Image (tube, rainbow, N blue to C red; front, side):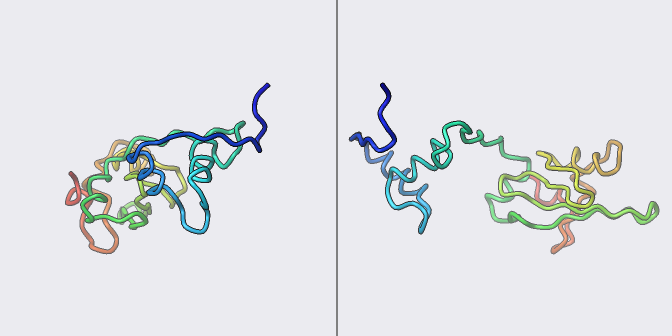
Length: 141
């Protein structure tokens, strides 16, 4: 018979695991190492819906890591002759979320812009960082 959810067990963990649990703890949410494990391993305690595996970092992750781009930074591509403008933003894991039109998230600039335009296009050379005015090529790592 499996233990009930109120059963308690003692486990031993090494210093490295303890430090990792501390780093993953969320203030005002996790009150104990068990709370961290429950949130991370059991997706908040719901065994029927396990946590989704994280996706691979996108092409902009290097620029986020070096601080030249930030999650939430806005990107724009204007095609004045066609009277079209596309907007996107950088996600925390280096992907590009196309927001106008709402087309989803892409791991690389060219497929993101290609989804907007309906054809092959160089996203590195045509997406522009809205605040700096620089093309994404400048941020490429």
